[in-house]
Image 1: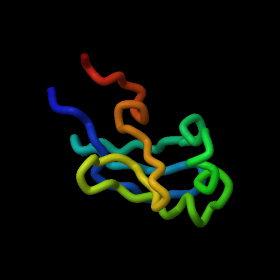
Image 2: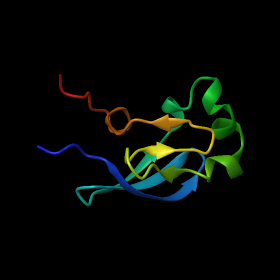
Image 3: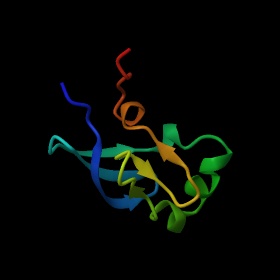
Length: 82
């Protein structure tokens, strides 16, 4: 089984994003539970900054210019296998 990763992110309107996964699924996700801690403060408080979300080209995860990111396994409610 291959790991699911993020292929694309669209319609980023705080706190909701639409993601396309590497298996072709489209999911609409509320990121509120993941936007904790100091690094996520601009993401949490500034809709313009939130909208700057991108897909990291190598890690295939959601990320922002300040280095904040959300691991796909956490984002999708899965735990990495041991």
